[in-house]
Each structure stands twice: as structure tokens, then as C-alpha cells.
Amino acid sequence: MGGAILPEHERWEYCVIHVNEDTSQQPSATAASQKLGGSMSPDFIEEQFPDQYKRKPSPHPAEQLGRFLNKMGSKGWMLTNITNLGPLQMYIFRRRKLP
Image 1 (cartoon, rainbow, N blue to C red):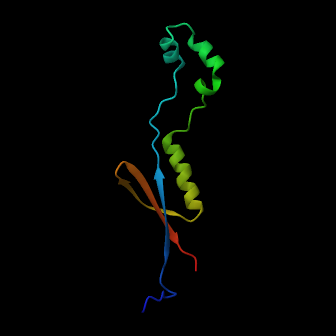
Image 2: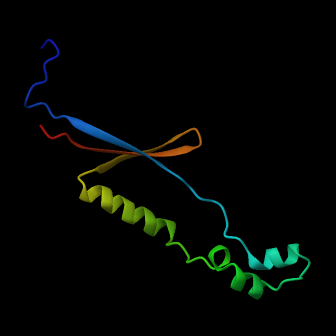
Image 3: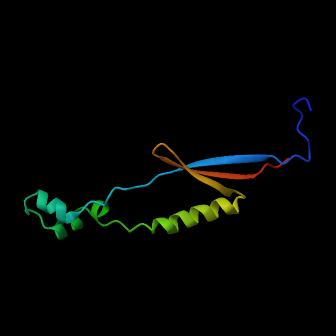
């Protein structure tokens, strides 16, 4: 063989994706109002700082993951494994390597 790659030999390419889990909570106008001793109402805080306190809710994590997996599948990637590497969750995909 001498290191030569045979044409009939299947070859694969791999893609490893680290998936973040966002455990942070959205800011609460009620909590902010309480921190300020009630000097500003939650409604006032939401009105004055809409970008911070009136966020559009994110899709459910299962829906987000489904969209991501479908996108990878449409590019020919197949999920082969999910593994944890310390605190990191890794998704391992593969597809046939084109000649």
C-alpha cells in the first residue's frame, strides 16, 4: 500500500460543533424596580429601556436544535455522536468526502 489511498476506499470528513447552553435569565423590570426601592415602576423601566426588558422570547431549545440539525443535514452532514468533553457538549458530524 505504501500510504496510497485506494479510489474505492470510503473517505469521510468530520465537523465538530460545540453547543452552548445559555442558562442566563432575561433581566426583570420588577427586580430592577425593587433594587431601586420602588422609585421607578416596572412598567416605567420596561418603557424606558425596551431593548433590555422587552425581548422577543427565543424558540424552545428543542426547536432551535431541530432547525440546526436540519440545516446540517441539508448540507450532507450526519450526526454521529454527542459527547461531553469536560463541561463542553460536542456534536460530531460526518459526511462522505468528495473525490
